[in-house]
Each structure stands twice: as C-alpha cells, then as structure tokens.
Length: 271
Image (cartoon, rainbow, N blue to C red; front, top):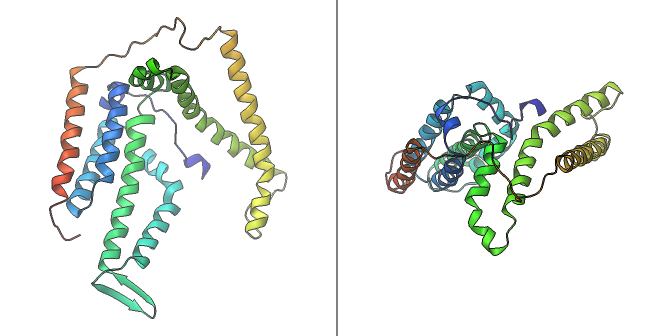
C-alpha cells in the first residue's frame, strides 16, 4: 500500500504541463479547486470529469500512475459514498428494507462526492507535484509571494520549507516501507489482534522513522551550512522562470471553464 502513494513525486517530461510556468500552474491549481468545489449539477460534474481527463492527457503521465495514486484513497472514497448513499434524505425512495432507505438523491450525492474527490486528487497531483520539479515549485511560490516581503514575511524560507516537505514525502514513505519489512522479518505482527494491539504494534515503526527523519533533517541542514547557504541573501537562480504566451492562453482557458461551471450548474440533466 505504501508503494502506491505517489504524493510529492515528480515525473520528468516534456509535456505541455511540464513546460508551463510554475507560477501559472500554482494559479491554475487555485482556479481548478474553485472549479471542482463549485460544481453542483450533473452537467457541471460531467464537465469537471472531462476537464480532469484532459489534464491527465496533456500531462503525459501514465494512466497506471494516476490509478496507483488513487488506491490509498479507496477506503475514503468508499466510505464517503456509503455515507451519502445511506444517510441522505430525499423524496424518491428506490429501495427500502426495514429501517434502511435508499433515495435517488442519495445515489446522486454518492456519485458526485466520489467524482469530486477523485478529480481533486488527480487534478492537484497532475497540475503541481507530478509535473513540477521541487526547484521550480520553490521559485514559483517565492515569486508569487514576493509582495509579502514588504511586510516582513520570510517568503523564501516559507517556500523552501514547503519544497523540502514535498521532496521528503516519497523518501519517508520509502523509509517506512523498509522499516515495516525489517520488523516483519523479525517476527512483528501488524495485522492480527484488536485495534489497541495494532496501534501498539506501530511503536516499533514510529520510533525508528522519527529517528531517521531527524537524522535526514540534520544532515540536510549541515549540508546547506557547509555550502554557505543563506536565506535570500545574494541568491541567484540557475534557471530563470519565464512565462510564455501559451501559459497565459492556458490560464485564460481555465478561467473561462471556471466561469462556465456557474452556468452549467443551472442546467438540469438527470444524473
């Protein structure tokens, strides 16, 4: 299961999204979140699903990678669908058995929530982490937050911390998988017993993982000090971010799609 978690990973490529300015992609992500969260009608959700599929296609990220990233969320998706299916009230009863009632509105809400969560996870990963290197992401965040420097906000430190956190997520996941395999080889059992026993069995995993994370953080800080790293003082960039006309066109299309969602919410189509 841990190997299926792809959060924070970067997949190099030359697709349209890979070549898009990191600042534009961060803005696109904010627009996309509004785009997905504002969808209400069946037509709007269909449009959201189509736009997410288009993003996946133009990112050139393998479909199996996208499906792999959704596996850890399968429990959340199923749980959300069940909650909306059995606990939503409505007018049209489709199935009734004793105290259990399933309404047409409950089925619609379950489908909409699953589509919403799937699109949120897929679109966020494709727009940001999968197609943006940690260096470009740091520069993009720092450039967008540059106006906050005038009020004393340490913009560069904030951007660097976010980039390092995203960069080390795959590393810590890999380290956790190694620790679990090592503990199982020593006879540790993480699957049997009640909930309290399983929680207690996680202690041999959390302690070495915490020690490993602390050691990696200390080594990174020491390496940065040895290279005379200073936050924002005389800092130059090896790769200067440049916005192309195609980036603005891409942003304009996304804004138009976001506005179109509000009109599609008025369209009534049987789900």
